[in-house]
Image (cartoon, rainbow, N blue to C red; front, side):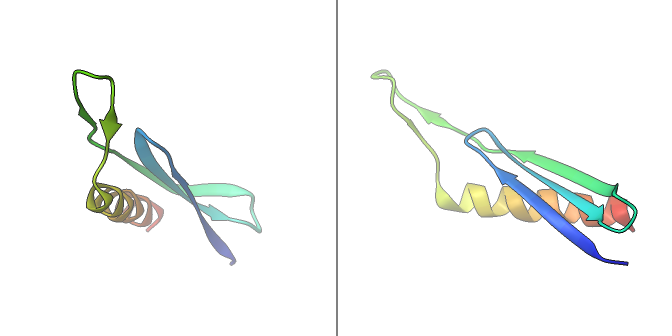
Length: 67
């Protein structure tokens, strides 16, 4: 069985899916939002560790669901 992880890290959230490529089947998926810092002038920022924490959370969810 060949498994692959697909990671989508955007501005609002990180999503992960675990796929069995031989069966073309999604085995697990997870997601985690990114907090956003907004100020009155319209600027939006995010801290780097929020992205890594979201990746770790989403990946853990996908692995757990995939078994």
